[in-house]
Image 1 (cartoon, helix red, strand yellow):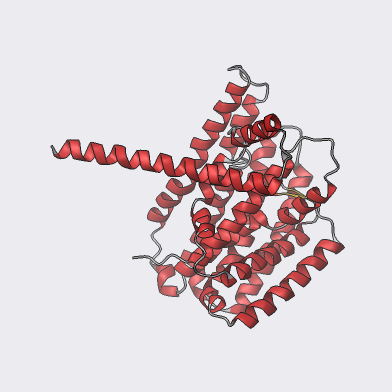
Image 2 (image 1 turned 90 degrees about the horizontal axis):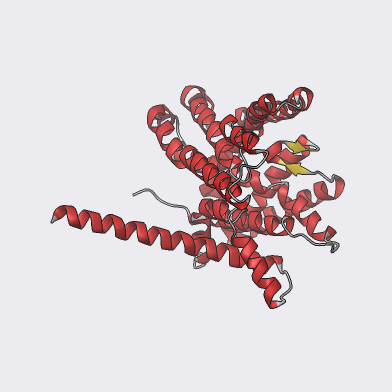
Length: 358
């Protein structure tokens, strides 16, 4: 039986909570001054999506930790597995999102319907589902690299640093290419964006992979060393946040300073990783949220109307908008919907199996 690392689920749990919290803040329509909340969103956006790519890299590092494991990669099985895990949900949920937008528009096609559909097909994606297609493309490329060249350089720190630097430079070049060739024609812009976005995604997966090769050692570190590492990471991360105000939207590659984004993406991810490995093992709720992070990603965001209905209830009851509380309620509702759906599917499958046996 494959071992499941609780710490990885903790990382994903913290990550998805930050995603939901930021979306609750961004989707808040008010004339109130929320500059503090906006600054908080900018800080979280500097690492929250890289964190999920880093986690993917960590899981790959734990799986393909030796030259032999890289040689045994079955590309057909990997492609099939990734398609079922990422590509199929990407197209299904994109269809659901577009259908709900049409319903919201009283079953009349909105003016941007062609643009929305093409965004899905071209790989640009619609928020927040772009993450799935970006991860699919980058993970396929990364595993291909592991299969054919990775085994020669596996675990060699100098080569790992060199590859990180190369991908970092390519990421800076990618965003410059996108800015240079962007036009008013979305038929050309969307595929270009999808291609250019793969490069920083690969960068963070590679960084996570390097961490994954050493993840067991990080988990087993003495608490005093974990605390020391966390403090150093927080110091550097804070210094970058104070020194540079970096607007980031990885979905549309709207990033002011790519080099600082790569740095804060790594530092922020490492902060969450060290926080996660310091959490007590008896904590159960966070890893459960982490296990359901993908379904939470799908359900919490408009046009799925959960957040909208929470806001309506707040208005009817005259309650203040508390982003933290909203995020917790939203996550609990998403998890409950998933559990109910899973229970119904299990019962239906069980009933069908019993009827066949009879």
